[in-house]
Length: 282
Image (tube, rainbow, N blue to C red; front, top):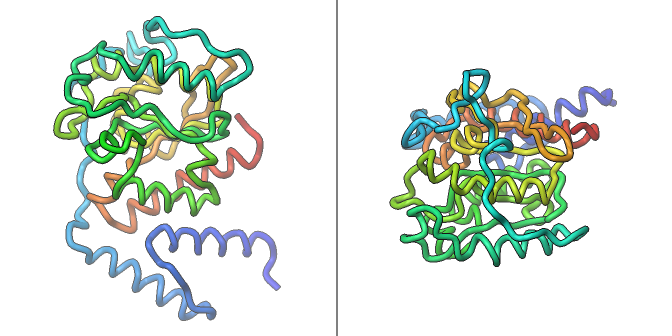
């Protein structure tokens, strides 16, 4: 019988293969290895599998970032007058924030092209909060974050983590769809940042997972690209204390750069999040 460490490693291997798109594996180890290699070759041969560079900000973040002079993370951005919270009720506080502040917001030009705002969804007391970039066309129509192809990838990632949408809280940097799904400008992100900051403070997650460069740049106040910051723990200074933040690639990036290497990197990031949630840290 295999020892616990071997069992854990094998389980992680199987979860990795499932994240790569392998739905079933044969029983014996030799055939398993051959099937895994074949799956990797098949994925690599998929049209459009050439890695691409994640989109950069439309303009450099106004708040600087990291250890550079003038760098200001989301937690220190100037505030926006917001409705009072409902004491002891995170769900009601989020609902009030959405209904009284976000839905009618006209603070930046993005409101002119929206069908509706996309506030957030999930467990208002979730241990894990996922922060993305902004709504796309399908999210704008549905009023929900991460629907469509990118949402399907996120659902698979959550399933591999033994989680569901209902067990996490999902929000975006901006609440209105940028024209042609472009990256939000620094000014747009900073304007909408007060809403995201309030969501983080209301949900008070134990861990934040940012997906894509814009989310990492706003939440953490960094200027480095996602390839430089992903896979490394960072910190968001919340009102209740520091919250660990793990940046990773956006699901939409995986759709453009559908390679085993990129998917494995994301799975490593997700495993780190699972370990942090599992050990009670944060």
